[in-house]
Length: 486
Ligand SMILES: *Cc1c(COP(=O)(O)O)cnc(C)c1O
Picture 1 (cartoon, rainbow, N blue to C red):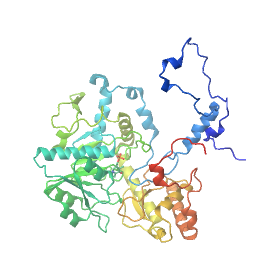
Picture 2 (spheres, rainbow, N blue to C red; picture 1 turned 180 degrees about the vertical axis):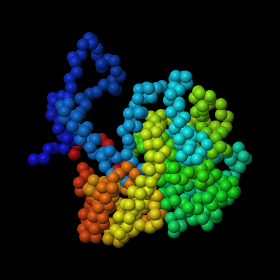
Picture 3 (cartoon, rainbow, N blue to C red; picture 1 turned 90 degrees about the horizontal axis):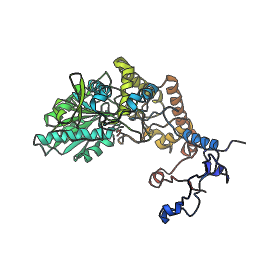
Picture 4 (cartoon, protein in one colour; picture 1 turned 60 degrees about the horizontal axis):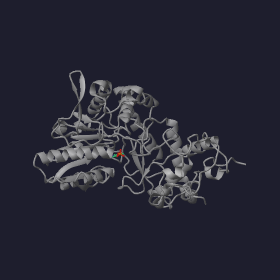
């Protein structure tokens, strides 16, 4: 007989069983019913499970094992960079001298923390080729919005209020057009050509006097380097626009290519991707923004500056777009990124990018005989597959993703970018061993064979998870988050 599911705490409940005991009430003459308004006084006992302390511990432990995270297995989620979060980062971020600081402590008391932030800004500025960096923005999308607001302020200062359009490739992350909209611009789509790169003729067509900026991810979300970037920068700059670099995922470029040299004016990075901050599950992020000299006056207030040997906050910034976050950004996640960069060193970060690209190309080559690869050239840190071939057998990218769960892998990103049919976007990252990559390739190849020989096995997957296939729309729109007895 198999042990019962330890997560089912309500089913395990037995009347009178207790996980803890409170001392007798020794406060005399307290009548709760008199102290509280009548509406607040319970008429019935709450329906809580009655279990022992050990049962409760097993309940939460069982629930925790139902999560999937990078610490439990391979997580090749394209664009999201689910790489290993080194545990030394946690040690550093939790040092009492950092973790117990209060953001309102006077500057002379927190010089050490300010120094680390200043050094982190300088490292990020060097990696991206920017003049100055703010650590305030709390996520990639927040960084995009911050950058675009600065571009807007610059155009307004120049009297160029007709610049209302932001050009975004059709392969871009969904946050790009959304941020452009929230910053008060109209997003304009530029097409991807048969190479998987920005269609240069179309770019020329949509660029004009109303262009505020081009937002670009490079390598783009197909994992391909935009080789025409220098010409693109010329086109946009000649028209009076600015170049925005979506560096959420900088895993392929560190020490290899610099957005500043490519002609970009503003960059954001996701410290919770490239720089090993944990993410997923809605935890705190950090999306620092770097700018070239011309945009420095517009950086959010306050700006951290070094004055002689002292670090201080500069609030006297009349052209700043304002403050965009309480205090100074998500300090803890910034410290994790700092710890990572210092422990890797610049040589280490070079190697990260090399191995990230090597791993992606290795997987791409292993899967090429079994799946369509719409853009067969060398990729950078990620690549896309198409399940077009499997779709003819009735098996779609979603089904393959579900079947991967049975093999113990988190699926890749699916149906993104939108311009690839039945898209699966794979980013292995540099932190995986060759053995893990091979196991994943073997699982993908096995599923491709199942699609041919026993498609129902794939269509009905997952078979091994606690809950099998969900109605995903309903799960998102009408989530049942409360225990309900069957
Ligand atoms: C993740 C990502 C973003 C958005 O970052 P968030 O921190 O989730 O807001 C933007 N662009 C690209 C290319 C990304 O991969």
